[in-house]
Image (tube, rainbow, N blue to C red; front, top):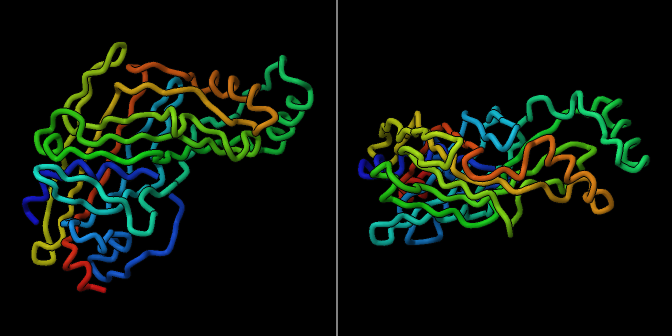
Length: 284
């Protein structure tokens, strides 16, 4: 497993948000985290469990710290010199974990141009104390992994098309920034970014690795994946079918979106575990 450490150090920062479901497999002991490893796929040579515990995502005028750990899990294939990511066997590839948005809707008033029914609904929601807003990042397409970029620390190591769900009683159940057809595309690197202005380059870190279980388990800590060259589209679906025409522009103004490339930043920090599929199976 030693050869895995350098190649996949950066994947530990990729813990991006799917709702909880029962594990497909039931490994135990040191391999307990690999319950969603795609063991039925014979070409998988490493089980992956990545947890993001820190960092932040800044879109437009809003910065959301990562307070609640989120997980990316699945496996890795070896295809030539590349290591494609294989989704979790049970479909729970990305844990959808809400992060509190600092400030929420506190101190924000309804626009005067809204119809009275919408203004009253907003004001009633605020008066009842429902000012908190959460942001949940969701994957809306396949992740792409470049082993070469992971090893060299140059170029895009991991590409993730995502959307962000905003949660609040007033905003409804379908308020998103980005969509499947117009996602936020994070091109994360362990190296140094090259963003358009006004952003300036930032640098990630590959992390530090250790091995246990006779080399069958690798743990990499202290990784940081970064991107500050991505664009963010506007909101959609906020306020439901009846009022999205009015609430979407309201959300756009609060968040400061759409925001072009070079005005947004993602820094994902965490740790990664890589397990030998044979050892994972044997632990069940």
